Image (cartoon, rainbow, N blue to C red; front, side, top):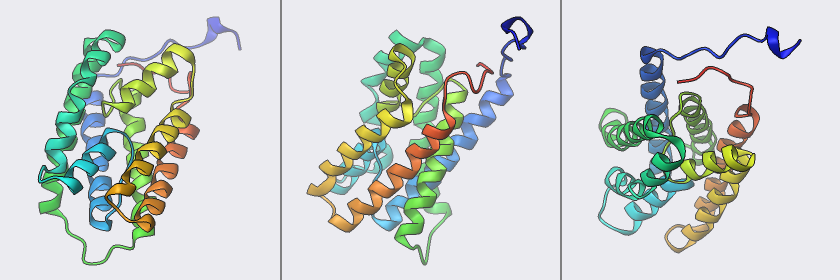
Length: 206
């Protein structure tokens, strides 16, 4: 098939962007609560938010929101104001929904391996939805997307490397079994991205 016969990229409607933003952040908030209940962590700025909540009186939602603030400068300069605004909305929604989900849903039994795998899948799918609607979870996600756009580095692989480094740093506040399961969750998350977030595979734009 020649390039001339390819259909032009479709434009997401505002409603499509809004439903993706809400659905993605709701899944990510659930994943974070799975990790919190099981005593696990994740990578990226969410992982830094976990470390802050474990080591200080600051809640995850507040810490996560504050950690992301410096990265909006990169988002605006490299990705534009629309991407930055969507990312700010996504980060704010995750910070809020993580706190609210703890009041809406509680687990009487949660197997840590199951929490790591399901949490990784939920977070990976949520991040994929945000990426496809020109948004992110801020922080490391912004850096990873910039590196993929600028140098062609695969987002899933770069994210996996950074996440594993953050989880290794978490040895100061959590035990080794929790780190091992957290690494499992990070691997599952980034495999979702590596298999599904490829340049040219999804052409609709926001």
